[in-house]
Length: 277
Image 1 (tube, rainbow, N blue to C red):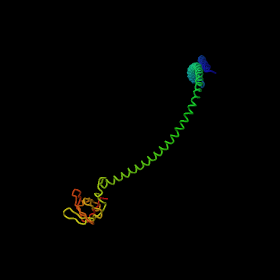
Image 2 (image 1 turned 60 degrees about the vertical axis):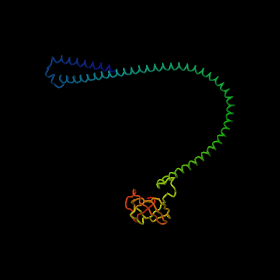
Image 3 (image 1 turned 90 degrees about the horizontal axis):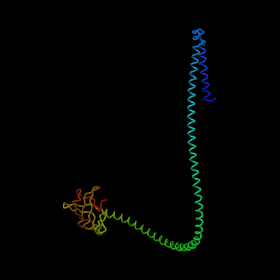
Image 4 (image 1 turned 30 degrees about the vertical axis):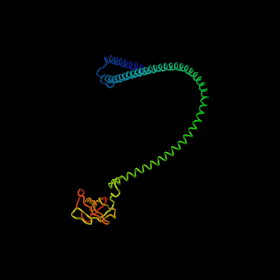
């Protein structure tokens, strides 16, 4: 049964109930109203039952109306979707027709292009015959050039090997030169310093001190000392001062104390050295 049929059935039921209630009312005028109303199964009970049934039927009508509204909305939505789909299909058909027209035009262009390319191919075939002869000549020249390149490459490789060897020697000399420069700075000498002016690395002791800023030390010319050499004086790990050699003997020497380097009183037994270590 359709939704509309259900609605009509409910309406007929409501009208039947209404007519029945009217008939009961007319019939009640000829009976004892008090008993008819209050007795079990009387009018009061019947009215309550009919009211309940009437309310349920009204709720059913409301639900039926809501269902109809939903179905109508669904139909409208489906109709709109179908219309949109139809429009899309029409547009797609129009595009396919345009593409077909374009393909027909392109096909004609391709045929014309194919004819032109065929003519060009024939011309190129003739040119290729001439190019093959030129290529063979060029290949022979290339082989000659390649042999020359091989010879030159061998020469370059030998030169690069010599260059690497020289570069390694150069780098080694730079390292040695750097080390030598550090040593020369440490000992305060330069390439222009006379060899005789370089104080030898020797150690000795102060064996005598006088009141005129002169000291006598236990090393002399046999140890490499020369006049005007400088010596450092220290006691244990403490720096005491610097002295300059003024007189040299084979096994001892006399030196004068340089005041600006004095950091303490020089005493007998203090150690003297060319450089502090």
